[in-house]
Length: 82
Image (cartoon, rainbow, N blue to C red; front, side, top):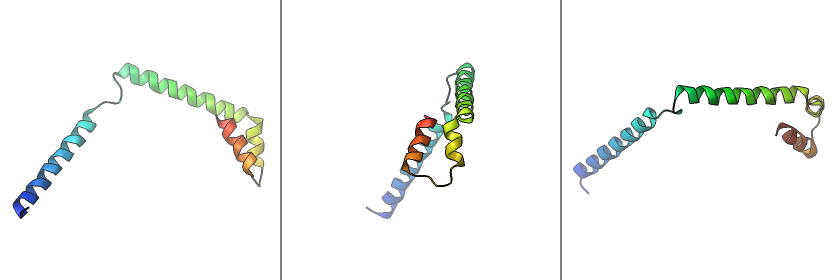
């Protein structure tokens, strides 16, 4: 492969990469503004529910106040956050 072919190959690769980035940038995440609002409201409500459950959990409060954790404590924490 000579130098000219080598440089042309790099140009083709660069142009393909630019086309890919343009395609990914132009895609919208949501189909419509209404869908976006619904999805964001759903995730916010889910977050609020999880926050409320975490704040009301006695087991979680006990774990957070504990100084030395063992494997069982870690498992309790993970199960309480599910």
